[in-house]
Amino acid sequence: MKGRAARGRPRGTATRPATLLALLGLASALGGCDRLFSYASRRPSGADGNLLLDASADLRSQETRGPELRPPDARRHDASPCRGPTLGLAVAANYAHACSVAIDRRLYCWGNNDNGQLGLGDATSRAVPSPVGTATWSRTSLGWWHTCGIQSDGSLWCWGANDDGRLGLGDTQDRRLPVRVNGGPWLVVTASNAHTCGLRTGGALSCWGGNTEGQLGLGHLKNVSAPTPVGTTTYASVAAGAHHTCAVASDGSLSCWGLNNAGQLGREGSATEPAPRRVGDARDWATVSAGAYHSCALTTSRALYCWGSDSSGQTGLGVGTTVSAPQQVSPGTRWLAVSAGSFHTCALRDDGGLYCWGRNTRGALGTGDLVDRPAPTLANNSRAWLAVAAGSDHTCATVADLVYCWGANELGQLGLGDSLDRPRPVPICPVAPPPSPAP
Image 1 (tube, rainbow, N blue to C red):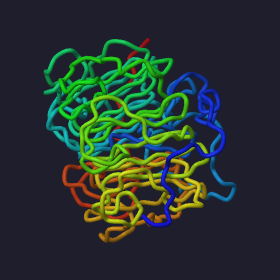
Image 2 (image 1 turned 45 degrees about the vertical axis):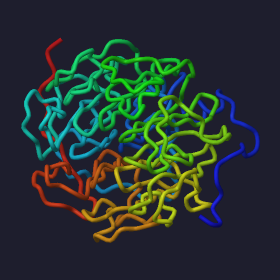
Image 3 (image 1 turned 60 degrees about the vertical axis):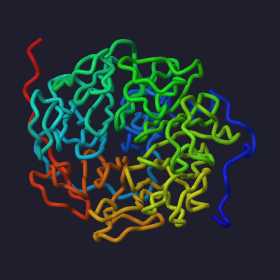
Image 4 (image 1 turned 180 degrees about the horizontal axis):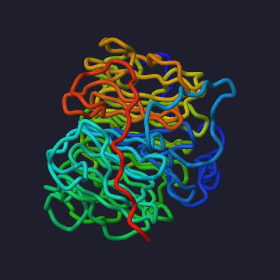
C-alpha cells in the first residue's frame, strides 16, 4: 500500500450538508451502488447504487434527471435492437438475478427465481426480462434471494426469501409477489444477503432482517423482521454488503458496521461492530457501495477509495490481501460512480469509459477474456455508459435507453434467453408488458 493515501483527517474545508445534497443532485433530504452489489450511475450519485428517477426520490440517487455529466465527445449508442419498451432507465444486479426499470417505469426482472425473487407469482426462473405487474417504479435493489423496490409514490415493496425477516413484513414467510412494507415515504432501499436497509424522507435510516454480525446497526445481534430505526443520525447514502453496512451521513462523514473479517468496515481488527462507527475523520464522502467483503466510496471531488478483501483484486489496489483503511484507487482519476460486486468492482470514469477489476473467471469484467485484473481495466466497449450494476459473477450496465449484461449466465441472469456465459457486453430486450388497466 506504499504510495497510496489513506483516508483520515478531512482534506480542506468540510462539506456542509446542504452542499453535499446539491452535489448529489437532490432537491430533498436523501440518496446506487447495490447493491448489495448493485447500481451506480454517471448522473449525480450516491448510496449502494440502484435507481432514482425523481429529484426528490433519494439521496444516493444514481438516476436523477439533473444535468448529465456526459463529456462533449461521448458517442451515442447504436439504434436500439429492441422492439417495444427498452430497459435503460436503471438496472440492479445481485447473486443470480437482475432487474431494471424500463423507460416507461415498468419493472422487469430475470434470472434465478427459486425463492420468488423475480416477483412474478411463481418460482420459475426466467432467462429473459419479464414484467413485474403494471405498477410504475422509481428504483430497485436486489439481495441474493430477495428483491425490494420503491414505487413512484414512494411506497416500498419487497418479495422473495424471508427466512430471517429481510422483507420487513413482520414475519418470516416467503413472498412470490411484491408486498408493501409499512412506513415511508421511502427514498432509498439497499438489499443484501440476508438484510435490507432503507432511507425515509429526511434521511432517517432503518434496517431489518438477518443480524448475526450486527449488520443492522442496532447495537445487538438479534434478527428483526420489520424496519427499525438506526439511531437518530440522518444519512444521504447507504449500502448493504454481505454481512456489513456502510452509510454516508448528511454531514459527509462515513460509518460502517457489522462483520469486519476482511477489513470491510475500514478499520483494523476482526471484531464485529453492531452499531455505526466512523471511518476516519473525513467529511467529504459523497456515496458508498458495499460488496461481499469489500467496500468502495466516492468523495465529493470524485476521488475513488476502496478497502476490505482484495483476494481477487476487487479493491483495485493491487495488493492481494486485506486493506483495512480506505485507500485511493488510481489517484488523479475522476470517477463518477462505483458499484462493488461480490468479488469484482466496476466504475464509471468522467471520460465516459467503464472500468472493471477483480475476479473475472466468468467474464464479469467485460474485457472479452477470463483473466482477473488487480487494477481498473477498460471494459471491452467504446460506448458512453451511464450506469453500472456489479453482481456476483455478472455485470449489467446502461447506455442511453439500453441495458447490456455480461459474465456468468447459468441461471439466465444475463436476460439473453439462454444459459451461456458472455465475456463481453450484450444488449438485452424485455418481454412485452401486459396492457395497462383501463382508467
